[in-house]
Length: 265
Image 1: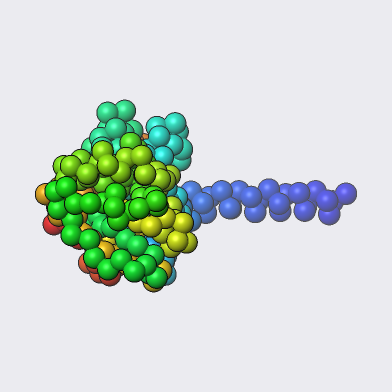
Image 2: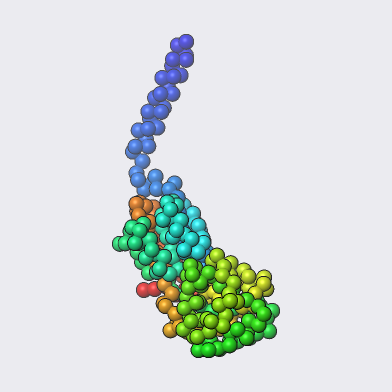
């Protein structure tokens, strides 16, 4: 009986010591176990994954990513998904969250730039397309289809539709468009040879050996391609702020440029 009482008292003492120790641990040490969740546009998958890996290797904290179309991610955040940071491939969906008061306006930064291109499967006989007003895009497609992000929702598709309309070729190809859930899905369609042409970001084309760029859209044919980033409302804790700062660091810039993004000043 005495031994059981002694063991119980010892257990209580240990628990009290643990509670006291936890209360004395500095906030920065506690942050080390705090995972930062980043919702990022699909086109940033490779670059962001590399940046997150470098960040964790430096023992700065833990990072978890969710990659999808900017529209999909914005709607998930609006519906309460537990994102800490949002990286969009256009300003439209960041503005959408701002209008819903779902991000912190003072943390918003225009981080990256990009361009859109036409790609073909690497084995295609097509070598070059001169992208200019009224160019015969439908003829290049033949009986095939043009894979691109959904032109109503996915940023790459929105930019693409805008460019094709300004170039006066949208009407001739709109019924040949294979609208995909995100730009990486469009890339995959071309890689598999399931479509004859694809419209993607240049950074997407650069990561694949199974496609070739045959045309680059002049920047004046569409709105500037801007990737804004911001902290989600009520998620501005120290660990999140540290990763936001890292995204603007020289180390992150090197990775973004490696993948072909233009880092905005």
